[in-house]
Length: 222
Image (cartoon, rainbow, N blue to C red; front, side, top):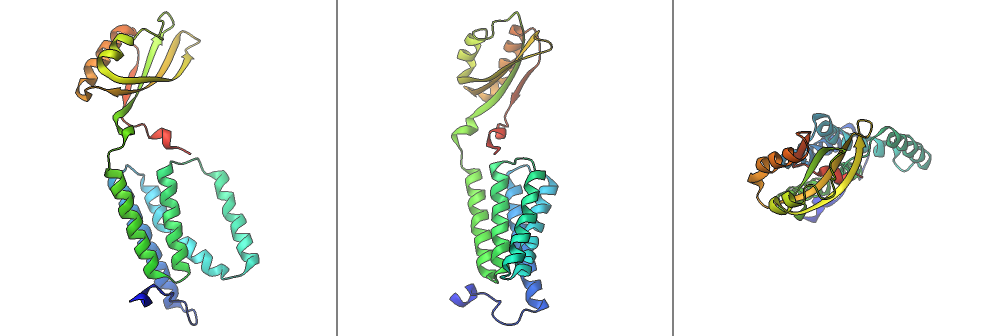
């Protein structure tokens, strides 16, 4: 039974073995992409990248094949990609490391290990995304107020009535200093009262812009 976890690259390397490694790498990438898109809104280009990346990694490692000079050259070439990439979210970077690890395992010929690792890691990712976290109770609130409003205590009574907790994250001026833009992190007492809460805020800020956002994933960026 344990023999299925041995490497298949024990003899002469052939086209058939190369295609098996590539197919397994692509399959691992597809499994990870499906798991990530199941509970998260992910762009099509990122999902395609997750499928293609382990195939590329597998081919690169097979090309290096113990050659130190080639390995250093490949590492230098891949390091240039970092300077052309924007900082991603922790979730996306974890998915990239997942498919790269699967690609490395396929390049070493450990097909069963690559598939088993991908399935287990994908299941863990799905399970953790379904578990309620404390941060899920919080939402982002953006309020624009005129300069005549003393914003430090202008909304205290409304916060006491509608929210369990609030924290002022950022305050900045706008429109030549005539407006203040405030970013809060709040926990609603009753999510169904969001519209009533926003209507009450509009009466205090002169009917200027207000935004209540459920998506606070920007804090996960690295």
